[in-house]
Structures are given as structure tokens and as C-alpha cells.
Amino acid sequence: MRRSPLLWISSALVFAFLYIPLIVVVVFSFNDSKLNAEWVGFTFDWYRVLFNNSAMLTAARNSLFIAFMAATLATILGMMAGIAMHRFRSRFLPFMTLTPLAMPEILLGVSLLIFFISAFGENALSLLTVIIAHTTFCIGFVAIIVRARLAGMDESVFEAARDLGATPWQTFRLVTFPLIRPAVIAGALMSFTLSIDDFVITFFTAGAGVPTLPLTIYTMIKIAVTPEVNALSTLMMLLTLFLIIVATRVAPDVLRSKRLVEDDAESNA
Image 1 (tube, one colour):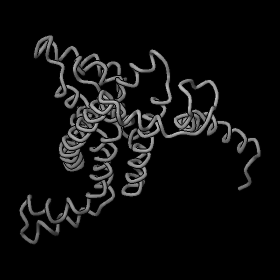
Image 2 (cartoon, helix red, strand yellow; image 1 turned 90 degrees about the vertical axis):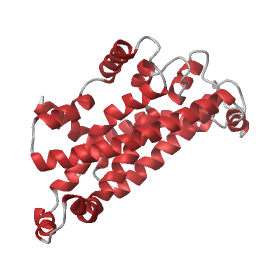
Image 3 (cartoon, rainbow, N blue to C red; image 1 turned 180 degrees about the horizontal axis):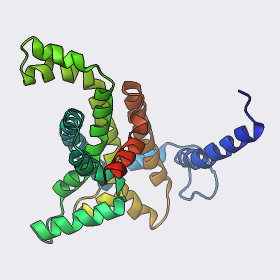
């Protein structure tokens, strides 16, 4: 099929619009100047400043811990939800599991904020509430990836295991889990990536003493965008890109999971 030159030009313009700002951020993280107005010279000083910034390192530790815990919990719960959705064909379970992903993040963040304050008091916001909030919206991603993996399998495999006398736990441990392991790993990596990058929900559910990388960057850019912010943004982009590449290698359809989740949530609403 012959493609029109106009299609190539429009595609190039779209990709340029998306990626040139990211390239500029990476390039100016090596700029030997406190201002981003013009290029002065090449330096690694801003990366050294970044790694000597105790507040930034604390925010990084918090973000990594939150992302690890949220990804772990979401993977366990999402795997069970995905298996249940595939096995029981219920309309209620997909609605409950996938709806948090279909609603706007600001609405979910405000709802969780009101819930935490109403249930636990005004001082309830902490590292734990952020982990709970991130787990809430990450479960759906894992569930839909696991369910998609199970949907492409032959049910006779599981029936054969039961016919041979395997208990439900043995069937899961020896048959089901090895088959869905790539989807589980992809869901865990996607959950980690989404959690470490999240700003809106974190903004509403984090306490005053719980700095994270997105919140710290937001605080810094209100004053000025320094090359230190560019250096931090570059490292976060590299980490996110690495995790997404690994996830897509493990499960090629992982990047389509958000669209699938939204479609399923809307159809079950």
C-alpha cells in the first residue's frame, strides 16, 4: 500500500511535538548555566548537585518505596481479580475493579482524600495513604493484562489438571501461574511506572511530611526550572522508559492495557 507524503509529514510533526521537548530537557540537564535560556557549555555538575541534595534523595526514596509497595500489592490483588473475572464472568467484578481507571485522576484523588479524612481524621494522610491510593488505580492494569492472557489460553489445560487430581492450589501453582507469569511481570512493571510518575493522586493523598519526586519537582519549578530539575527529569524518563521497554518485551500488548481497561469499565458502567 502506497503511503501519501502528507501522511509522513504529519506523522513527523506529531512525533516532533511529542519528543523535542523531552530532548531539550535532556540536553539542558548538561548545560553549564543556572538559566535555561541559552547553551553555555557541557557539564555533569548538575547531576552531582542532584545526588548531594538530601531533600531530593529523601523524595526519591519515598517514591521508590511507594512504587514498590503499590506495585507489589496491586500485582497480587490484580492477579486474583483477573483470574476471577475470567473464571466467573461477572459484570459486577469488572465494574468494581476497572472503574477507578476510567474516572479522571483528579476525581479519584479528591474522593480518596475525603474518604481518608472522614474515616481516619484530619491527620490521616501519610505514606500509607499514598500506597493505598496508588494500589487502588494500579489493580485494574494488572487485572486486565492477566485476564487478556487467560482469554487466549485453552481451557482444556486447566481441565486436564483437575482431571488428573490436582487441587485448586496445585492447579494454580503448577499450571495457571507459570502460564500467566509474563502478564503478571508486565503488570507489576507497569504499576511501578505509573506509581512513581503519579502527581495528581499523590498531591491529594500525601501528607505534609511525605515528599515524593513529582511533588518535589512541582515545588521546584514554581520558583524556576533549573538544570537540576532537568537532571532529575532525565533520570526519571530513563527509568520509566526502561521499565516500559521491559514490560513490552514481556507482554507486547501491555501498552494497550489502558485503552482496554477504559473500554471495559465503560461497558460495565
